[in-house]
Length: 106
Image (tube, rainbow, N blue to C red; front, top):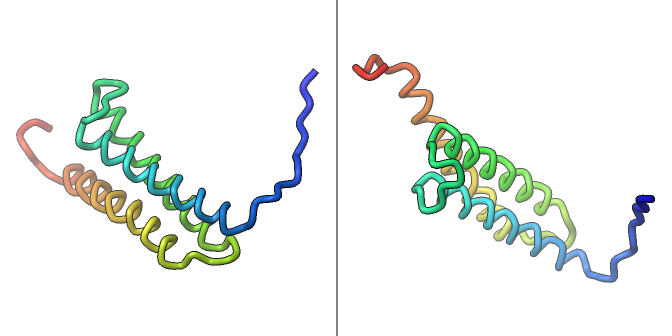
């Protein structure tokens, strides 16, 4: 029998905001480690690249959620959002440009 219960937390909202921000930075760092092939779970960039982009998207979403948790840690939330959006947009731009190129290996 599976029992799902939600216990009330005694942690302040500030602690939850910090955890969300740290989680967002962790997603950003894991995505960077995947792109620079420091960690290679699939040993194939066609699988590791999208996984990194998913991590950056998840990190950006967590940063936006953390922005609305009270009390607001505005500077950390914006930094976490940028830490995820900048690499996400950069890699997406490279994929778009490579998709439109007429390079010899296509």
